[in-house]
Length: 226
Image 1 (spheres, rainbow, N blue to C red):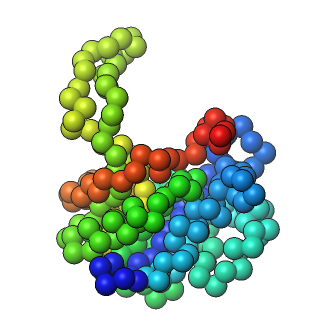
Image 2: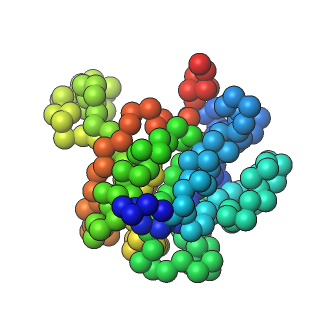
């Protein structure tokens, strides 16, 4: 931890099957160079002095995690994921509380298949949000022209792209506030696509922190090609 960044916990939801990758295993276990995607992702956090602990949320049937060297790292705790991302993150937050995390501790939620997080972006997020009353997320302003489609697949309008951002991760919120927002939203049947959307549903306004555009999420086979 530096003088300008707070201590933090990390939750990595990784219970999905990654069907769009058309692979024989969940996408987080596909190789990027000589190591799996999730190993690269974990490395983004494990050398940070402010890290208090990290929880990886995996499918109960996951048979790949135990084969990785990082599976025995004492800084990492495995817990069961859920049916959707929000369920997995909520499980991870409950596990952090069991590990001793306090309600006002900062928690960073990061995609398992987003291995290119730059340390400069991580430190920027921590520094800019450490005193924020809500928290926020890394994001990138939309660069391309956007089109709004109608039911027939035709353009109905061209929105002002200066108002739109692509949501990335990590997303950084206080454990207690995020756990309440996720739990209440799921109980109400709300559609929650990321942690920010849960906080928005609860009436909060997360802060956008501009990050690098190369912090991409691996979702399709071509994303792994050089």
